[in-house]
Image (cartoon, rainbow, N blue to C red; front, side, top):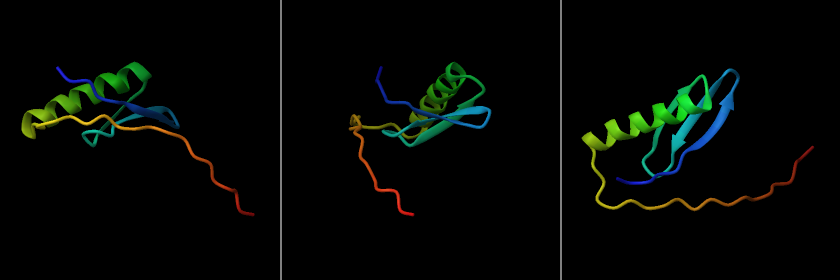
Length: 68
């Protein structure tokens, strides 16, 4: 079993979930549904395209200047 990252944001009435390590994405009406659907999409993807080695993503923040 492997552990991956889920990056989730809300778009109007749905949650969109993405796995940056694999490149899979899914959505759901609730946060839990989005994560469950992402897990299923990632499992199906990995059945077809197995990975040899999993790399953890590095997350950080940065600032940008707002231009008028």
